[in-house]
Image 1: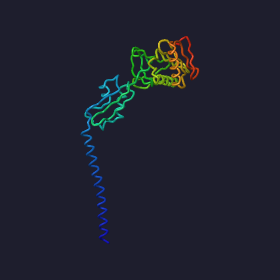
Image 2: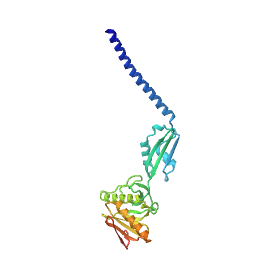
Image 3: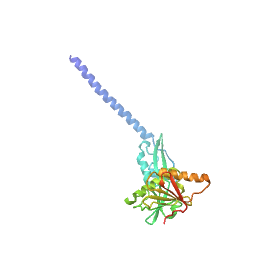
Image 4: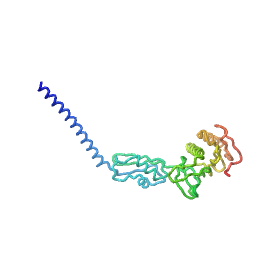
Length: 263
């Protein structure tokens, strides 16, 4: 009986030591793999795609990624955030690790959609309301001027903030620009986008047309109706001029001969 107990104790000890041996072996292998990654997977190339306004060097400098960094220690969320915070025209940044030694920075840039005046200067903004650049009137170029909004403490790279009393108009402006962008029509918006009224937005389109749309509602449907009107006139070989009023119904449009213009 005593001999059997001794054998059982020896088996238990061997079992415990066997587990510790396996754990130690795993830790040694893991440390070796980690050391290999640190030693061998160094960044030897940083590639940039999607950029046009900023050079490759500007994007790489903003990212903080340097040659010789360990590939696996390049923090992708932090890298993206550094790019977004330093380069106002970047809308989205996606860093990608490419084995064995490359970091790719995929960039999507903002497109200026309108200009607005504030505190004696001009500001460019995209369809989402991000302020991209500040300068004199010359930076606006052919972009439409937003009327009826008053930015609060504008800053390059920040989202435009307005008083609570103007929030509905700000949201309407964003939905309008987004709907126009979706149909490839934003580039033809000219002169002005007037959101001064509480229930309607007026904007210039082309050389001789003003379009009126409701401040709230389905902007995608309104802009689709607008596009269909333009296509119908184009098929007839006619030019749309005056004021196109799209505030009567979802699929109803009225063309007035006199063009509405901001006072």
